[in-house]
Image 1: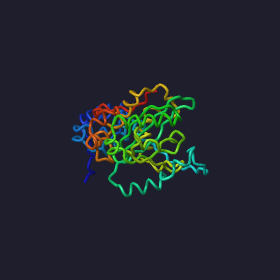
Image 2 (image 1 turned 135 degrees about the horizontal axis):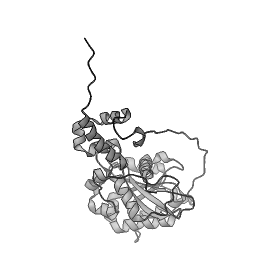
Image 3 (image 1 turned 90 degrees about the horizontal axis):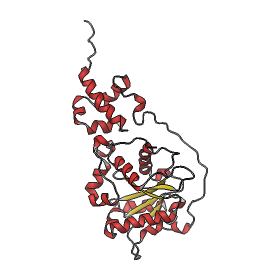
Image 4 (image 1 turned 30 degrees about the horizontal axis):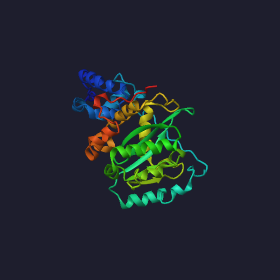
Length: 291
């Protein structure tokens, strides 16, 4: 018998799929985010089929336009360096081993990871990032680059706005990078009246793997502001808008939920409003370069 002809998807379906997918890709969305956010698309085909159509050239979107089209893994051998914190006394009871002991005995407590994103060498500004690994959630605070006073003042200012009970509920355990800008990070533990409200710890020196979730979200930030670009043009409103889009980005690792929705259910809208993060409709999420 003659071989069976290969079945083809109707041209009408291809055009409909192309219209939805191309609109999402042009906003910087991943195929997974587009698929989850568009029920009609899920009724037409599988996510794998969409990817296959892109790679076969059946859609107007080209493979190189997809997020994470090429991912290179690099391994760099680093020479040992001295601890970067200026005052070694702040590490007493706050090392990464202390952090691991604390989290192992408080498994349900939320952990907040802190780091900074920098632009050019001569910049005056940087972005302090705060990440909740459990939810894939991250928000940013504009700070003076390399300034421990700015980090301390901004975090304590946030805690003061939230109130002691909210800090104890949302920020019980805090893990910071080991950079100079965090040399006064231990001082976030107490409120203005000297009452202890949380615990602060530090990662191992030059060990990004101590907070991988934080680094992953930085990659999303770099979609919008690439490495090497100045951050001095940013305002806090712009930072809030960037992270609002990032937190509205569907995550397959979180059961196709968004970090915003997970944190909303756990900590409520008042907290999200206090840090300036809003929900962006799925189809309007935008992660495109702005500089």
